[in-house]
Amino acid sequence: MAFAFSKMQVASPAFRDRGEIPIKYTGEGDDLSPPLSWSNPPEETRSFAVICHDPDAPLVQHGSYGFVHWLLYNLPTADASLKEATSAGTRGRNDFNRNGYGGPMPPEGHGLHHYYFWVLALDKATALPEGISMSELLKQVEPHLIAMNRLIGTYRRD
Image (cartoon, rainbow, N blue to C red; front, side):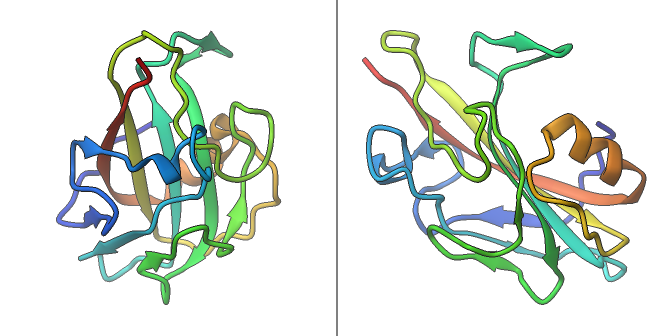
């Protein structure tokens, strides 16, 4: 994936950057997607996509590593935030092999995991179908990626 860092900022009222993700947003809790917000996207932004990825997960598949917890796309520019347990956008297939959000649930005793909540700003509105994988999503949106940034949350199961 091309990196297009920008002045766009990503935040959550549920946890601070590099802070612990509250249990209600994990597989051990209510498994709800956390609220997110972003600011300062480029003026030419026409849609957004969100990816939550755990690069610390001991999983290698399809030429990639880590674990995909959430794919959300077809988000219009009128949306600069997502509510807790959002129903906005179109859900992609995560590595739990289901569409939508699947919260952090690292293997017990595996140590601290980092969860990257990426927000991608795109110069084109999208109408992608439900259930595509991260690699399919990136293949479709990468030519239109104009900015991105992330919020990192942490979680561990002892």
